[in-house]
Amino acid sequence: MTIASAQMTKRADVTGHRVTGLVLLVIGLAIFGLFGAALEPGLETKFGLNPGFGSQAIKIPDLVLPTQPAIYMLAGMAVFFGAWQLARGFRSVGAVIGIVAFCFIAAFLLWAARGKTFNLVGMLSSSLVRATPIALAALCGVISERAGVVNIAIEGIMLMATQTAVVSATISGNLYVGLVVAILTGMLLAAIHAFLAIKFKVDQIVSGVAINIFATGATSFISSRFLERNTDVLNNSGTFPVIAIPLLSKIPILGPIFFANNIIVYLMILLVVALHVLLFYTPWGLRTRAVGEHPKAADTLGINVYLMRYVNVILGGAIAGVGGAYFSIGSVGRFDEIMTAGKGFIGLAAMIFGKWNPVGAFFSSLLFGFADSLQVKLQILRVPIPSEFLLMAPYIVTMVVLAGVVGRAIPPAADGVPYEKD
Image (cartoon, rainbow, N blue to C red; front, top):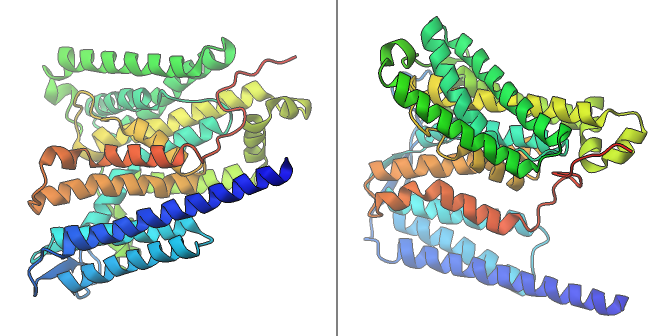
């Protein structure tokens, strides 16, 4: 029986390698056929490596590539990796898939910007900014689910925090007051979710959905009834200014992307590092992971399971509150109905793709932020793709990631399971 099981596993692995190799081959051929074959020879694509006006970064020469040969080279790389995977297989299939995906995206950009100039640094900087609320939502999910509580309410928490942030900042005339109020709003709603899920053992999905519905209805009512009629008094806060870090902001390429942003982007980066250290290198993180994996064993060792779950969910709400503040006082300075646009749910996808790890969730969020930024840039370049399809890009990426990753991603063992003390 054991030998038969081993043979079946081996056959499944071989089949998986072959399917992956065929898919990579098809992608390579698609790069050749879709982007390279129909191009006129002699076209060049210019990638701008310098930010726009007002940046302190040192200027460097732009990258100019011959469009068709560069696309053919990328297609050849993808075909090579696909053929090798089909014939012999790679040990690290994920890395190979990432390389081929990069080849496809790079070829697409070369084709989309053929004969034009494409500000690559500007798009990467925009990707980080657009990834900020997604990353904060993902971090909220990580810290909650590591303790064993599923938090579907992130979207509603962010939406409520968005509104309270702009209203309090407008009334007080202080953006930092708005940020603090957004954090408190997130903590309050997260505490309600925690109370329902931990104390009363309400189904955690149902509790989260209820908060999302409440937030959508409440913010829409307040916006139509009060904010639209009193815009200058209640809905006109302004936004946090860009803070350029001395010396670091002058580094070519990296400086404009990472070291010339507003305070919410910096907070997001600090939270990624801080949460990673706390979860994996401190006693608190060990207790959190123990509660999420085996709460009964943690309780036996004297860890207060209920307290750990309350603390983690409420801290996650505070992080989601910062993410909500990004949409109003960190971006446009006003509140519009449903302006979070599903970023809380995309953050949950990034959390799963990042395997419940803060650093992994951050890099996954960059992928979604890149897709969001790309659709804006492509509209500017007037790519012959309907704008409706371009707007779908972040959500298509979300579905692809979930379809390909959820089956292999392993959540904490006690995630979503109410704990009952003996």
